[in-house]
Length: 68
Image (cartoon, rainbow, N blue to C red; front, side, top):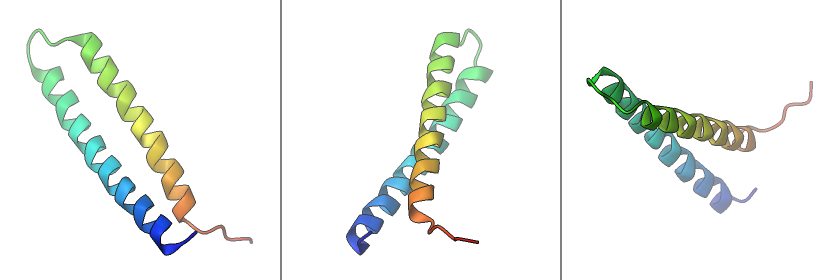
């Protein structure tokens, strides 16, 4: 992996972490508000899980394999 590719992955990773935190806040706000849209909460939770999967994938790419 080149330095440029690693920099791009780290930038993307930071953006995904921020979006994940934003979704956390949005989900929490929707859940405490009266009359919240449960379908919207479910959609946000699904998106959050997708982000977590993508974050894990990128973390795995950035972490070098260690052969024991």
